[in-house]
Image 1: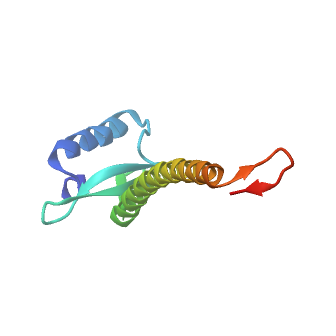
Image 2: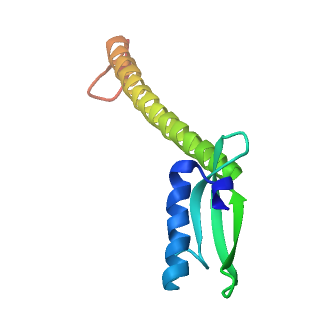
Length: 129
């Protein structure tokens, strides 16, 4: 029974899907896969893909297959965290670069003013002290 692997709040709706199928013959979940939350024996939950397949129409036997997505979800979360850190680092670098450009302009301005204060270039282009 699906109750073995589904949290109780979700299991009842899965039971209803199966009852509707057996009454109407309309397949909504059977033959498809869906990402759901499953439950381990210890009660902890995990993300998984659940697929249902009809084994025998006469007996109403349906087989379920699950694939644990915990590793994939952990990798996705790790990638999102790395992307956020990368964006933050990129912003920091841009701010620091802008600060360096301002500092460079300031230093060049000071050097230019100092040069003009130390030297005078006359009308003939000769540097005089």
